[in-house]
Image (cartoon, rainbow, N blue to C red; front, side):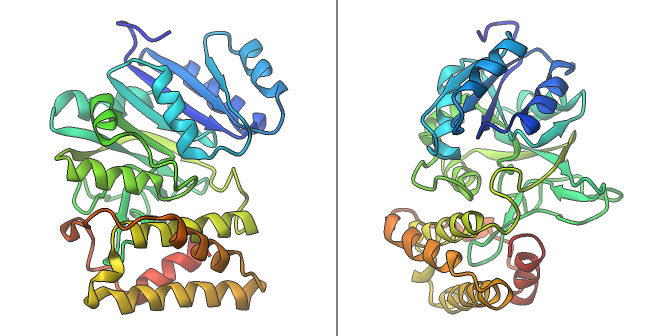
Length: 314
């Protein structure tokens, strides 16, 4: 249903959570920019897709087998559209009315920009993410998480790429990169895509006026066993895919950080899901890419990295 009058395709992966999706769709209906919404549903209830189509007839709905993962759903949604620009949006994001207009503007202004990061807020009004940043061991964090919105940096310094919850991409760039890595399933697929886009020569812009509230942990539940498993899986997958442990300077820090994270989960919740996920993620990945260290933020210390994990990931 995309066409010349469409500013962008908006791809929303959902696990069938109508309580999250319906408010998101209502807010998209009030956007100032023309767009086409593509919802990709891989939830367990087959009737959800029919419910969406009935309530929102102008929304394209793709039904997939349950449990296929975020990356596969996003790739399916991107493939179903044809607009020059693509916006990825989680169903637990509440975009402001000018969100779409603001997030695609940097891509229209700069042909070298292949992606743009939105400014997402937590429900308490502080920053949820203003793009992603990564420490020297490729541990990825929401940039400026927990900061007040006053006095935020205007430039894109330190930005690796957009957070997967809300980011804009040039279709040409995504296709050149081969889409999202479906081996990751969930978590870090946004950082992985950003790294591959950077390797292809694309830049990341920031869109401070593209604002929305991110409810957070709407899919797996905060600190659930499944969430911890998937976080651990993606972390080890990235460590191996980008050969982080091949660098003697950073290997010890990376291993120490992972042991600390697993130990914290065990002490606080007697939880081994994170460890199991790391083992599975390492086995699933192939060491195929060289990490561009200039994209990492070396000022994120060991102590700061551990603090951030404990604060919002566990």
